[in-house]
Structures are given as structure tokens and as C-alpha cells.
Image (cartoon, rainbow, N blue to C red; front, side, top):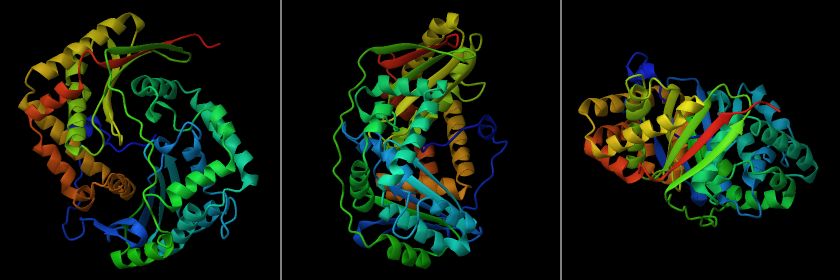
Length: 441
């Protein structure tokens, strides 16, 4: 499941692999334009490169499904490429590759994203093909069964992956009956129950009528981008789709699950807390900084406190539209699980009740800001960042992306982080998943 969050590594936290972007204000501010029919266009010209990246963000992921059509968002993503009146089934990839371009697609709980990178001279051509399959997919009956088998094979592969299983049991335990607790891909029964009319209805509501954002990053001017996107994406009027209301129940007490999985080299402990929603930008950045303080690098609090009993430890804050979650994952041995859990909770209580040091704050700020700059060197990652925040409606983050994120990082104080820990990292309200190894059958 794709996520918007800067990925950390110890070297960049130490400043050893940090390379700065050319933060030239002449071209490092993105343009946000609302085009005809309500389509949002985010454009960032990068004249020093020879490619263009196109991202199309659909405000329809599996979180917009109902009990009757679970798995439909992911299935639609597969069927998008199965033909239009102008592009035959399976022809899209051949056309794109013949133009020296690469494409990808992903479905999450909050969105579906289509991405394409092409030589700048082929921008108009590939945009024509991409817009055609996204807006005018036929979703033909004859292509449903072969693609259903592809989806089922993907599902079977997922259920043989211990990491995927552990993660989704964690989600199910945190979010219970909320769509965030259900795998994006759905279950085999749900996938088998979907019909072409179900996919067409979802496509009609979310692709043709719903929230759609187009991001263009690269060596294409704003004028050309507006002309090309307007001519290909704007004929269809857009209205906000109906959004199912799924309240997220707060965690009360400690929810525990224990699972046994084959092919694990060591036992694992996963702890998780509910966190702020994605639009609470200051809070989500603060949660990422707490993650660094607790587990990032050999000198982090938990790495030091649990060193005798663990093989590996990491934590991450997962950003989601309705509610994020903060996880700590430990690789250890079964006999140490209780010691490790108690040690984690002791450090969580300490970060809530005792002052966070200025040195820890500055280290977290440096690590997060350096990794942001490093990640944004990739036009694809920049397009991802801009598209996600545009979908959330955080347009200031899009326009001033080159400093807005970093400004927020350095605006946070030790008191801010401690207040966030007090609000979200409650020591007696969390989820604990004990994953132990079992002999393969």
C-alpha cells in the first residue's frame, strides 16, 4: 500500500548522504490551477531535466467502497487498461513503451493513482493515451474473468507473505469494521462476487464525475500543460461523489492478538496507536519526529533501552485521510516479548512525562528535513507529494512545497512533541500483535 511519508535512513540523518535540491525560487514553486469542470492541475516545471512525470489522482480508493462492493476500487485499477473505443485491450503498455515511457498504478484506502514518466517530447501523446484509458475505460465483460484470475493470484500471493499478513491483522485490530481494517484488494469471495456493472458504476462515480487531480512535473511549460490537460480531461463535469461515513472507534484499553506464521526467522512484536488525520499537517509531521526520537538510529531511545533483547526495531507514522496510526515493530525472540513490550511502554511513558531534549529535537528536525530534500530530488516522488496533498486540499503545501514542509518541521518545539505524545501515545490504549514462528505445514 503506497504511503506519503519520508523514508528515513541512518546515513542521511547523520548528514552523510545529504544532497540539497537547487531551491531556486524562480522555478521551485508549483502552480495550482482549477480548470474547467472542477479538475485541479498542479504543475511544477523542472527545466533542467529531459522528462515529464504525469500523475493522475482519483479521489476513490477502497475507503469509498461499501459492504456490497468490497475490492471494486482495486479491480477497476486493473480493468482500466482493458480497452476503450480507441485503445484496444492490452495495447496501452505497448503504445507507452514505444514512446520510451514507463507507467505504474496503485490503489490505496484513500485514492487511486496512475503515474507515467515520458521523454518531454512525447508528453502530449502519452497524455492522450493516459486520459483515454482513465476516463473512457469500457470495462468489457470479456476481459473480466482473465483479470479476475490475476487479482485472485495477487491475493493468494499476499496471503503467503508473513509481512503482509501481520500488517493487515494489525490494521484489522486497530480499525475493526472501518474500511481501513479491510485489505484494499478485498477477499476472494468479494472479488469473485464483483460484476462488470459494479466496476462501471464505481468508475462512473469516481473517475468520470468525482474528484480528480492531475500533476505534471518536469520539462513542460505551464502554458502547454494547461492546454493539453484541459483538452483531454475537462470535457466531463465533476461533482463531489457521495462519501460513506465510517466513524473510527477510539481505542479503549489494550487490544491483543497472537498469530503463528511459518517461515519466520524470529518472532515479532507490533504495537500501534491511533493518530491524527492527514490534513493535520503539523501533527503528522510531529508524529514522524517522535518516530525518529524513539527508534531511528543506534542512539535512539528504544534502540539503546532494548539493545540486549532485540534484533531490530523501527517505527513509522502512517498518514491516512481519516486517521493515521503510529507503529513500533520489533524483531526478537519469544522469551523476550514481555520484557520488550514493557520496555517500549516505559519509554513511551517517559516521552509523555519527561522533557524531550533540545539535542533530540534538532536531530529529528535535521533527519526529517534532509530526507525530505533527498526524496524530492526524484520528479516521481515530487509528483506523488504534490498529488497527495492536492487531493487533501492542502494547496499551500503544493504551491510552496520547497519550504512549507521544512518550515513546519522547524516550527515544532519540544513542548509540541510532548503534547502530541500525551495526546496519541497513551500507554494503556494501544494494539499489540505477537507474531511467532510456526513449523511450515
